[in-house]
Image (cartoon, rainbow, N blue to C red; front, side, top):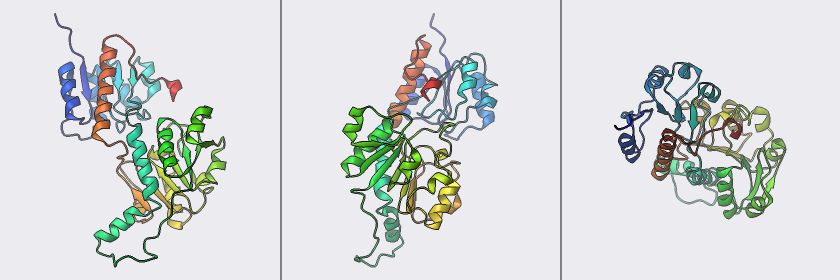
Length: 328
């Protein structure tokens, strides 16, 4: 007799090839219209699922998990960050949590480097001038930006993505600096020609560009608060492709409006999908809709990791991407 397939509830639309494979392997409930689930819908999902496949925008908190049926034993999250999941409650209920690390490193680093180049060189400003029909022809002083070659880049969070950003930035002639919970091994520092700053405050005061590449945890919430942002030179730029909550968005907006910072490139926001309306008024800011990891290759790789994590767990083994609290 064939073994009963586990009920897998997927909260958002995934690439077709991944959804098809899920349908083949499991008793799968898909979200065809891709509408984000409300808390009530998430509660209904955990009341029926053996496995929940949420995304980083689904808040799997105590209110949801406290309603879960006893058969829910795995949350196989589609994404790297796990700050949307109440890990302590999941652990207390005997629910294993997995994520999809590593596969988005190059995509996110590409987008970070694109913003590092685009903000100082005023790319989107120039594009808006063209579309508005306001270009009067080349001028010696027209659309002047800043050279990035020779500038100092300070990377906050030197994990996989931070190191991938450093490799790209080094090739563009930037001087690499970083702040991290731990100093990197000497051989990695030598390869990247990277300078470690134990003090974030000291680093911020000396950099031309800051790239935020650390995860959002309780310890990194508003890591760049008003006090720290004020340490940065007025000519400096902030690039964030990590999590919006790492930056005090209101403080950043005020400084950009007042000319206390030169500009910013933001792919993430503190209260997504809401964006501070005053940010939308600023020409010295590039705003992107959280698309740093948005490649079809990356999304399929993420889906394949989810499939492997579920299949491994169901077969009675420890899934390869199990999230352990101590790792965060």
